[in-house]
Image (cartoon, rainbow, N blue to C red; front, top):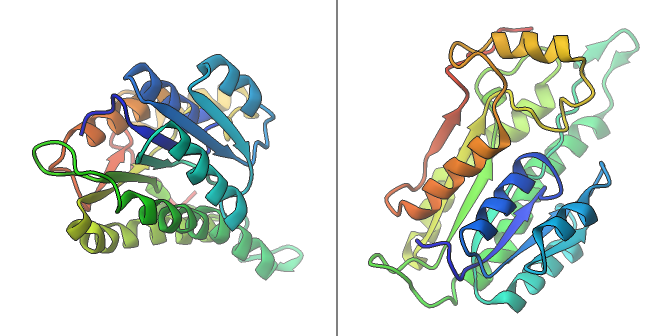
Length: 257
């Protein structure tokens, strides 16, 4: 499917993977991109301004219906919604039982809600509109969802129980959603990134980030958000990619800790 002329939503679009993806979409001629982000880093307005008048920033939590629906409604102002890239997520870590006893249940619920339930929330609202789109291209596509899992879905490290469970849920629903939406001409793909240079790692010292990069077999460095955006572009344009999870990780396989 061509990106040119299509309306899009990018959750987590105020920074990192999401901001790079939003830039790519506009560079490729998207009609408009809505950035839905809780904006913990306070970069939403700045990123939106830099992207120009075809970008709209909405501050809100993906797990809540009102901001998610607002993102869909704003995207439709640019034209029919064909592209959704779900980058929003949190990576908070905690052992199940620590020095102070068992982790709170709310901790687990919050991580799963943001990463998994939030992704599903945006999908269910956007899909209802995508199904009404005019079919485009030789295969009659009506839309595509690209969701973001993590290599932690496969090799979660100590302390990542909630994160791994949430990302494993995204992996698990990929083929099911692709099958359900197939009759409507809507594709569903998932990217499972490795260690990327995003705001989640920004607080770490350079030496620590360099050490993390050396854990990657090749190339021995952190991933670049532009590389995630590049893969997203290919997925959108390649209509035969559907119902699958692509690891984008430089061949790293995480150890237990």
